[in-house]
Amino acid sequence: MSLSDGSIRDSSGQITTGGSVGVLRLSPGDCFLLGSDEIEAVDAVPCAESHQAEVFAIFDLADTEWPGSASIEQIAKSGCLDRFQNATGHLFDPVRMTITGYAPSEQSWKDDRRVLCVVTAHDFGLVRGQATLRSR
Image (tube, rainbow, N blue to C red; front, side):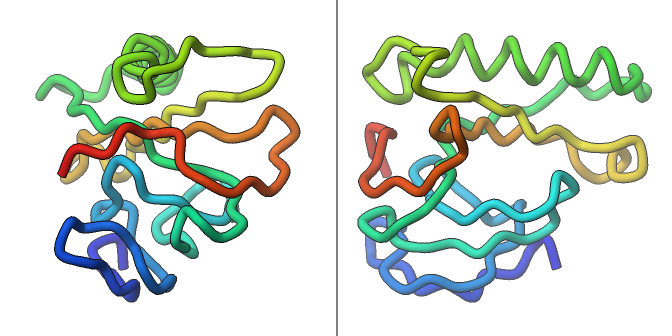
């Protein structure tokens, strides 16, 4: 399920018609509606439509033994904060927005080392438009 992509994308990779997208198929600039904290797939939508979240960066974690949840959460959070301005062209404003690093769980660690960096409005409300500088 995390590899599925039920959306339709244009030649640049931008979502033009929404659909269920597995987290391993998400790319920077993809917008979606929030579901549960344990995400395997999301309801992706074009960024011009109302959405709650946007992937602004993705990075891989080191190929090591499972370092523990607290360590992973800290690495994900700091790694996403470090990448925000370069990915969006904006300074992070904690009054207006929230950054979340969706990281692998201990159960998925063997096959998944990717951290999805996601920005949402501080109140998790619906927004339109795109924060990410698109470079596909």
